[in-house]
Structures are given as C-alpha cells and as structure tokens.
Length: 308
Figure 1: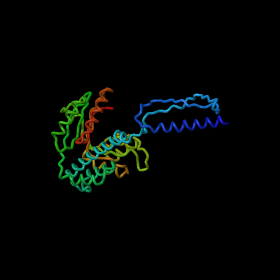
Figure 2 (figure 1 turned 180 degrees about the horizontal axis):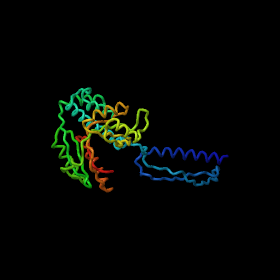
Figure 3 (figure 1 turned 180 degrees about the vertical axis):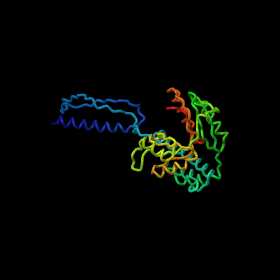
Figure 4 (figure 1 turned 90 degrees about the vertical axis):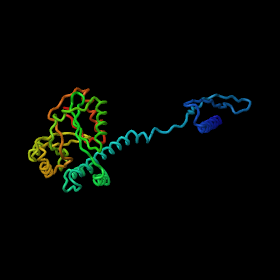
C-alpha cells in the first residue's frame, strides 16, 4: 500500500512538472524532445533507501502552432477569383446596357434588347442599383461597337465583339493577347460566319422536364426558326439555341415565349458556316486563347469556328 501511494505521488509530481515545463517560452528549439528520469523509492526506511529509475513521457518543447485554417488563403484562392469574375461580368453587362440605351432608348417597353439585357442582369444577380446606374450613365459614357477578325491556333477563325470607349487601347490589348498565345489579327475570318438571329432558352419546360431534341425541333418549326442547337452554359446546364433569320427574330421570340419557354437571351449572333477540326494540342491552345480574350473587360463575346 505504501509503495502504491508513493508511486501515485511520484506520478502526480511528474504530471505537474510536465505541465509547468510547457509554460516555458515558445521559442525553444523546434521539436526538441526531452526525456527525464523519475526516481521511485522501493523502501521507505531511511537506512534502506534505494531508487529505481523510471523513464517519463516525452515532452515536445516546440512552439505552439495554430490550426490549419487560413481564412485569407480561402479568400485569396476561392472567394477572390469568384468576386473578380463577378465584377468583370457586371462591368460587361453595364457596357451592354449603355450601348442598348444608346441604340434604342432607355424605356424597356420600346427597347426589346434593353428589356432582354435587364432580365439577363437579374438572372446573374446584378444589383438593381448597378443596373439603374448603367442605364442613367449611358449618355455620359460613350461606347463604341467594333468587330475584330483574328486567326487562332490550327487555322481557326475568331470574331471578337467589342464595346469600348477607346478603340486604340482595346486593339493594342487584343493584339498583345493574340501574339503571346498563338493568334494574330487577320482579315478574312468574317467570311467563315453568318449573322443570324438567335433565341436562347433553358433546356426544360414549365413542368421542369427536360426538353428532348425531337420536341425542340417541333418547337423550331412551329416558331419559324431554321434550326435548333443544344449547348451548355458555364455551369454545365443545358440550353437550346433557336437560329432564325434576323428579320424574323422578334416573331420567333414571341412564339417561343408563348409556348412557355424561359428565354435566357435573344439577339443577333455570328454562326460559323465552315468549321475546322483541331488536334488535341491546338484545341487546348485555342480554348486558352479564347478564355484570355474573354477576360478583357471591353470584349463582349468571342465567336469561333472550332468543331469540338
């Protein structure tokens, strides 16, 4: 019993001494391990005092480190790029709103293109104040529409739609991007495209059911469209593009709207009439180039004739 009591007292002493050692300054030698010996008396009589050395538990004398949660890292690598992309998208939509007001007036009831853009802004969660500011600021900030022709990797053709207040600045920026990424400004790319009216709708009906391609073709015939294509947006959601002649764009939009389809966008677009098949290497380079061009704030849309 006496031996057990002595053992407990020694263990308690070891524990308290270990805890006190942890309060030492944190700038000790990193990851330095200390192993001390404790003495346990095996006999309580003064004339027969023998000690048995017992190893204590290891103590790490390294500085206390924080848990692996770095809030700034998350903001920088996740939230930061998302906020930057959203800000860039809102800036482009603002340019488009100003141009639409300049072309057809500030009243959405008499300017279908403006009404369509406002719906797009709302769908992208653009603040109402930003939409109103862009419409009101249309007169104070002039936007010039330009269409640039270029060649990409593998002989692909590119059309770049631009809204800018300085054609010189934007042209120099585009030339720099193209020259550094396997492209070049080049006349003649326009001949690979035809300007058409396009009505883009969500790929599901009023009941939330996917619209099959056969049904989409029936809707195209009923609405007066020439063709329908199935595409995907940035979030991999299915969209349907109804292609028609420019003169019948408004009529096709009204008929599709009457069928209860959710209109995402409508307006003139350039449709490739001749396409090119690229190697895997050229295809990757072309997509990288298009992405870099799209990052320019003055660029509204990039059309290509890559068959992917």
